[in-house]
Length: 212
Image 1 (cartoon, rainbow, N blue to C red):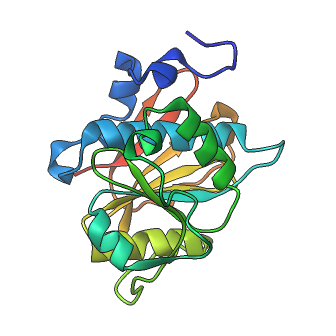
Image 2: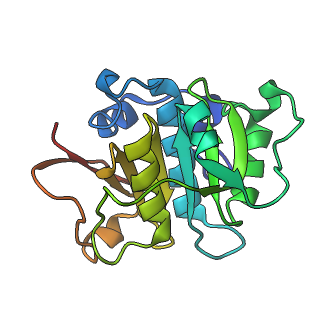
């Protein structure tokens, strides 16, 4: 079911349909040691950005979820932090106004840092993590390298929105899942993951997850 704005009802209310849970099943595992509710909602927000873009153009951005103390120490703000000084409840993933603010800020450079309980702690952050021990496929840029580096150095999970509308999930320094929000993209897309994977598809989304 869709709202008048075209956003699925489960995203507006914070609930998830069974089909969405099924699609994200390869990503949302307890073994990740991360609040699965927070991770799911950030992934859905990333998919909204990938589908909608902003002001008629596609945009790229990154979300880093959990282990936020270490992530903050391994990054710095590129501008005055837009979230500084705001109460925690107004920076929570469930707040609709916050979601619209995030979509606006996603047009700027840098990453969002999200706590395990779903509070946006900072935006527009430059990631200062070593890339010496990570390797990403050719053709992916600095945002993907930063995601691989920070998840190798910390216990966080990173969600990268590409300007090509693909959403990639990083954990332990590697791509663990690729989400393709528009079915027509699938015929034009080649995977960047290595090894065995599982594919889940419904009428609007394909999720390809690396097998554990």
